[in-house]
Image (cartoon, rainbow, N blue to C red):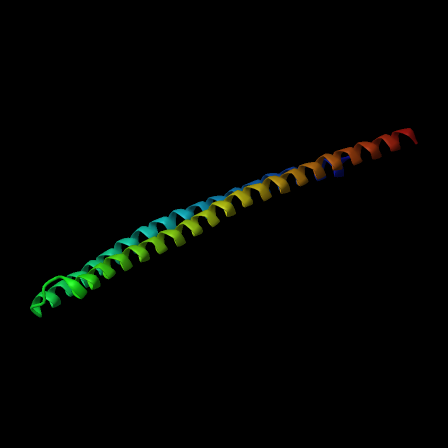
Length: 141
């Protein structure tokens, strides 16, 4: 009977530990998603600063050459703005994908933790039942 009780307690502790590990893994994934968002914001800001410097350089070079800001010079400037926007959208898209993956990872970690905890709890009750069955069979004999 003591073995059954120890099996019960051990499996209950394992269930609690499984849930704790799962929650830790889920929180880690959620924190990584937040870091990804922060990184994306910084990358976006750097992209835009670099693009503004490039555009300013294009404008200065165009004015210094005596060409008016029209025609192909204006088209080049427009292309610079459009390319900056496309790069920013690509950064945002990649960040969204990474954040969604991390959210899914967190949900999966919690689900796995619940499943493992349930399995350990079931094993703990099985241990008690087996102990009670053995005690009953000893009592009858």
